[in-house]
Length: 196
Length: 402
Image 1 (cartoon, chains in turn cyan, brown):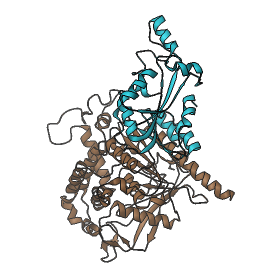
Image 2 (image 1 turned 90 degrees about the horizontal axis):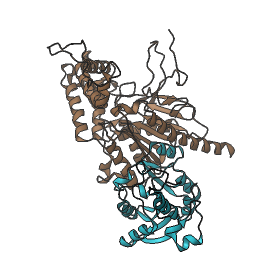
Image 3 (image 1 turned 135 degrees about the vertical axis):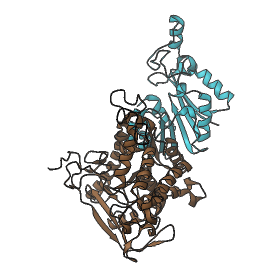
């Protein structure tokens, strides 16, 4: 289980309705079903992922996130999840607007591009950073909208998104006092729970 | 010469005719006093009778979905969905008790236009009442009662079969746990109805139709039914599939499927291209095995299907009761019921806050893809039904333990 998901699990209420955008192999929804008795619904586009969801007995709908969520009605879910996918969608701002329309709250996790090692790679080598959490080359990466924690905070302010919870963690998803002091410099992954 | 039966076949199967004496009131208001349904079953019902699966057939299907009838013909073809039903197949007969029937109004042994009307001693012909999907499902529920199946583990169907599955979830929401709806639509479009009307016109304008009483004239509207099927067949295939059928080598489809039958143009109004003789062959072989009145009736059944009419056009309200889960599957090249029609079903179910999974399979097979062996489709269906089978096995295990 990816460590960001273990943190998120605690933020999800028992018996709630959870929509997972880019649900992958469905293992997280399966865990939430088992431990939190949620109503599960996952969206994905990858045939292999969809197959794994079916094998796990997770509800999965083949749907392109870049086309929004027009088939979901307002406030029809308690929580809408978007984990490590924000940077791969066409218009993250519009998708978050859609998530907040469909869900009472949203949980979003993303890699912090301002992490000091990435900054150092860019400055010292003059090339786009490649690391464990961002393993692609600039030309083949699905990640087309990298942002930093400070960028995301600014987006929340501009769009009046209210931050309910925020955790900034390293690659083992441990938290440290350095990250508390300078999250945008020491944090590798950011986990936000937001609402309107 | 003996029939060569593959290992993963259900083997030789025996259809069974079940008689119902209770009158069935149809949506039209007409009443069928008594009727017979032909059925086939495969696999074993488990101890708590929880592993039963109902297969609903499409326009030209019947109760013979899998296995062989041992007709003595060494080239005998298995049932129409044999690639999906059998030991170890997607609908695994080692785990499920599978029931398939010929619907009311059909021509494969169930009561229909070909049957003798007890009131006249002659075949019903055009006097057989038009039955709707709802009427079919009502008759299927009585069949379930007869088989002492309180709740289906799953009801499964493609095309018109998928519409019966939707109707099951609406009419009998407590009597199924899973609904598998393949290559279907929540109702026909004007274009779909238009194709059906051309098919009907071609049958009824055949001089051998005799207002539907052709049995009494010892004939049948062969030309009309052939033409109807030819039109239908075109709509079941994608353009790509048609192109690919009439090319000889690896350049399949490169000539847009324009291969000539005799290698040259004849400059006559007869057959020039292979596609023409192929369609005629398909139409003719169908017409000698299917009843024209049943064809007329079932095209009407399709046209009339629109479960939203009882809910002021809001189909999501039709699904407000019950908690069966849904699997919806569509095929990219299906232009009869294209993926957007399946997405309509999915979106309706989401509005109704129902549990639904949706697969959009990339396939060249057209509408008929639901009967073919596309690997992703078969894998997805197998995975879903394997979870259904596990649920049955757990509940049956619970009964043994108690």
